[in-house]
Length: 297
View (cartoon, one colour):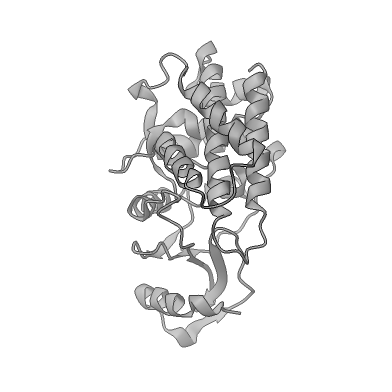
């Protein structure tokens, strides 16, 4: 089944790839929340056609940076193989990669931590022209929400997370902005954006990729793990452990949770027919951030 509003975009995407329509088969119904993915076969090879959401601007998605990052990930074997990408709207085709979304327990296995660290280091050693700035994203989303786009001002979680954000950015850990911690980051490498296969892990969904602090990536992966598991992952990545690393992880985990919260509230302003409870999810992220702020490392 093809969603009516996607028909023209799919035809454009097929043409961009140089494919012949009669050789393309849609093999299952589309899935997705933020974007819509179609599972297809072309000349008996499986692919995914992604039709992106319309709210790229308010969600601070830079399609040129995403395209460049996808090309890097594809060429280095750390992301899905890219077939084509349309920068004007973010629609793309990638090879269908076999595997599954891992569990936290699976990622914490030593052999998978090593695989994941190798992926991160390959990515972090690269460069693109675009920089990812979670603070700018959060500020712009807060301004958007405060304009009354949705009735968010009665939401206690929104008020609390806004106050938490102002508190934490006023007191960042010392040394957090050292340039040696910067590189090309995925910026949302949660388990939902991983494919676990046989002896490999792939990172997918590079919508927020850009130059930034590698601790944002690391925090996105292990920030909610127990202390010892965080230490294990940090040791695997850096080859050593410093006390300040745990401070950085806590700081960036809270920033990421606030970033997630504002993303969820803004997404709730979109298509009213969407069945995803973005506000409920945002409230959960806000609650986790507050609990973490009040707790120890």
